[in-house]
Image 1 (cartoon, one colour):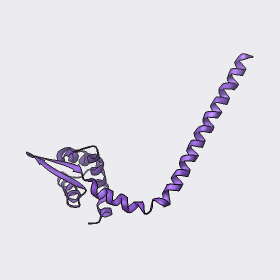
Image 2 (cartoon, rainbow, N blue to C red):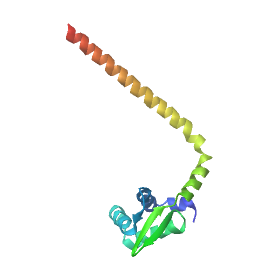
Image 3 (tube, helix red, strand yellow):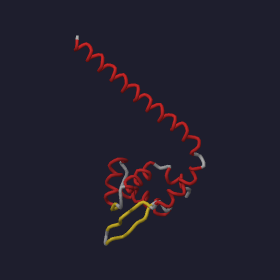
Image 4 (cartoon, rainbow, N blue to C red):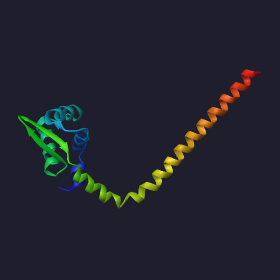
Length: 124
């Protein structure tokens, strides 16, 4: 299965988000996913299996529990592939950051001007 086929599913993306916080028991992951997506425990298990089989997650048995964690190797491969395309969004994001900073500066200066005007009025 291709990486984007795996990550294209919102349930599997959410599971990875949960696992990004650290190793989680399958039961805890299942509870959250069942509550958020309204799917059965066996369906959650299938999603965990897809993540495990595709290499995005690892499973470590401890007694009767199964602990899942993110395997970052496939994510690094995706990041390397995406690096080819970053040039398309990096300059616009940098420009957006500049504009946001400019807007914050202008608001801050406007507030300073308003405060100075209020001080002058109070002196009169």
